Structures are given as C-alpha cells and as structure tokens.
Length: 317
Image (cartoon, rainbow, N blue to C red):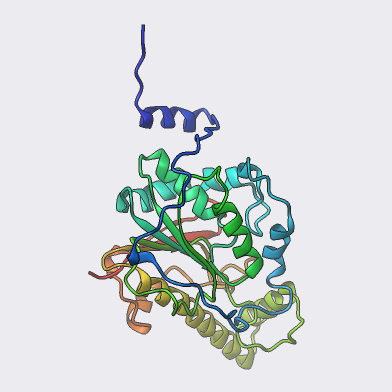
C-alpha cells in the first residue's frame, strides 16, 4: 500500500514532533534578480551611528567572531542574543506564519533592515518554505561590516536555497541607496535603541552604565531629572521613527512593514535597554508622518522575550 501525504501535512507533522528537516539544495545558482530590486551597495561606509557608543556593538560582534558551521547553521548562535537558531525559529514561527505568510507569494522580494549576519532572513525563508512559498529574493543592510560579511558568506553558501539580492553595509536610518517602493515586505528583527539618548555620559560609558543612568532618572523625584527623562524618551521615539520611516519608504504601496522584538520604553520596563511603548505607534502616524494605515497596526508578544513585542502595519496604497 502506498500512502500519499502532502508537503504541507508533512511539514506540520515535522513541526509538531520537532523533526529536523534538511532541505535538499535546489536552485543553487544565484539568479539575476529583477531590475526592480537591483541597486548598488554604497561605496563608502556610513558615519558613526547614534547608537554606536561605548561597548554597545560588542554584543553583535561577539557572535560574528564565532566560527560558523555552514553545513548546519541551525546550531549557530543568534546575533548577540545567546540563543540558538532553532530556538529563535521555534519562538518566532507562529508570528511569521501570521505576519509574513498571508502577504507573500512565491517570487516576491523581502528586505530586512539591520539584518545582522542574516540568520533571521534564513529562518524566515525556512518558515515560508514550510508554507509552500518559494523563490523569495532577500536583501538587507547592517551597520556592522563584519555582520554583513558573515551574512554574505551565509547567503553565498551552496547549501542555502535562495535568491540573493543586495546585502549592504548601511545605517538603517539612512537607506538612500535603496530605491523607494521596491519590496513586497520590509521588516527588522530588532530595532536597536539609543542607550544614552541625549549623550550625557562619556563616550566610553558601557551599555550597562548608560541604561542604569536612564533608569535612575525614571525613578527620580527631582523635576530637573524628570524633565531630562522626558527628553530621553522623545529622543528614543525620534530614533525609532527614523528607522521606521526608511522601512516604509522602500516598501511597495500596501506592503507589510514589520518590527520584531521591540522593547517598551525604559521607564516602563526598567530591566530592558529601551524602546517605545505600544501606544506610540498610532500617535506616530500623525506625529512623524508614518505612511501607514492606522487600522492595519497589529501588536503581539514577541514570542522570543516575554517583555518585548512585535508590530505589523501596512503601507498606504
């Protein structure tokens, strides 16, 4: 007797029983991507970013120094989080299925702002493949040259099923080298916050020192300190908007724009690194001119860290 089972049913079985699936390499040739997604990476490195201070970038560089087993990337540590690829993928899968799968079809293009070493792009494509969405062209940027070098290594590996666009060194607040209204979906796996939003501490202050300084102001009873805390919160919101405005710009009209694992403001969640509160997103549409449909905004727990959340919104048509 021959039993016939659909691909989707098999993948569901594998997910439930945690069977690791090894996809046979197919379509190994990197095909020329269409003129729509074709652009050149900047020839010059970006200037120092506002969030590049003290040891803030050390978290990401630490994992970039580790040797990757390109034949088994599922064992790789995830960009500064100290978590394995498989753990993050399992945690994000429900979100990816709800926020990515319904809006993409085979042959579409996606862009990740601050893509790190490219592992979030890889797990995203694996989830899409589990849902019969194939031939996705991936592009992205990261501020750290070492991370982009690693990303291009990963996406140049013959064991990866992919269509590779451009993975460039670039500041996520200035993606002027990327054409407007280009991608079918734009997202970031993490929007890195400003740890010392007003630059009140010495340049060599550690990330911990920067965070503790802001928390102290959150809890202060002094009017001057409270005022500074409010200014820091506004600076953090301005920083977030500068990222998101660029993501919206390069998305096609009507396309999803997604921010994953973002944190609440540091005064609301004082054990974190800072971010924006969930209520900020709708107010930002008017406050910063975000070109998105306010009714499209969806906020959900991140799935990876209980204190963080994900945002889905759609660019206006």
